[in-house]
Length: 428
Image: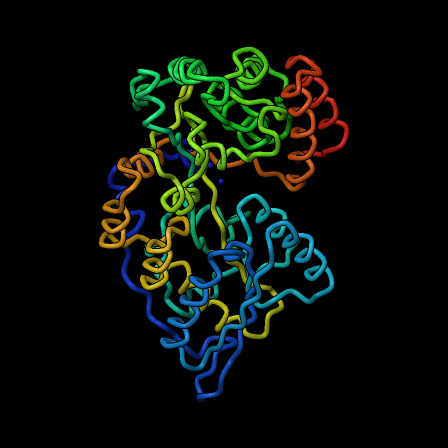
C-alpha cells in the first residue's frame, strides 16, 4: 500500500487539508438520474470492503440513500485476489457494473482501453467543485488529459516499531533523521536479544524494491517510460541492502525461520522490532498488540521515499445510469459523512478534506505519533505504472525471490530481470 507525489511536495498546509472540505450537494436531472420521482439503481462493484470493512461500506450506502431518495445502490463485493480477473472478463463481455473500484496500479490500463467514462460532462452538469477532493489524489485518476475517476481513499507506508524491544535492546527510538544505516544497526541489536526475536521485516518484492530503489537514487524506468533501468548500480546496491538483512545479518527472518508465520503475526507476537507496512495495519494492531508500539517516517538512504496507494472510483462508459452513478462515487469521494465513516473505522484515509475529521484521526491513540502519517506525505512516490504493469510486477518479483533466497547474486538477478523485461514488454 506509495516521494513528492506527482512531482509536487506536500506542505504542512497540504497535509492539514487532506481531510477538510466543503460538503457536496446532490444534483438531479443529469443523464441516468431521475427528476420525476422514479427510483434508479446503480450497480457498484468493489474489493476494498471485503472482510471486516463491508459493514462500513453498507453504512455509506445507507447514508447516501437517505440523501438521494431516488437512487438505490446495489453493492457487490469481490475478494481482491479474484476481483481483477472477474472485472477483466466482465468488461470484455460488456457486462461491467455501472460503477466500480480500481486501484491506482490497474487504473491506467482500464483508461487506455477506452472503457471508462470521461467525467468532464458530469463535473459540468453537477457543478462539481474539484477543490473538495485532494488535488494530487484526484490527479492519480486522470489519463491523457481526461478525468476518468475520483479517489475514494489513500494510504501510505510507515516504519512501525515495538517500543518494548527497543527499550530492551537499549536502542533509541526512530527519528525523522534516521537513514538505512541507523535502521539496520537497530535491527541487528534487536536481533541479538535472543534466537526467536528479529529486528526488521521488509518484503523483498516488487513494491518494496521500487520504493527502496528510489530511496537510493534509483528507478525501474527512465523519466519518459521508454526504457527499463532495473540493473543500474544504484538498484544493485538497493537489492543487496534488502537481501543482506536476510542472508548476512539475519536481522530479518528467512522463510524457514518464519515457518509460515506472517510478518504481521510475528510483530503482534512481540518477536519483531520493526515492520515496514501501511496505515491499513492500524486497526489490527490497535486491537491485537499488547505491547507499546509507535510509528515513524520510513528512513531512506540518499533521500526519503514513501509509498502512496490509492483506490479510485470509475463509471462504466456504457452505463445507462451515469448521472446516478456519479452521485454515488462523488459521495464516496467527497462526502463528509463518508469521510467520517472511513476515519472512524480506520479504513484507510479519505481523499476529501475536513479539518474536524482530521482532528479526530490525529487525536486517536495508538499510535502516539499519528502525525507521521501526514509528515510522510512530503515524500510520497507512486508505482511506475505502464500498460503491462502486472506483467512487469510478476517478472521483477520472480527474479527478486532468487536474490532473497540466495540462489543468485543481486547483480545477476537484476541483469536477468532487465533482459526479460526488454524481451517481453513493449514500452511506449
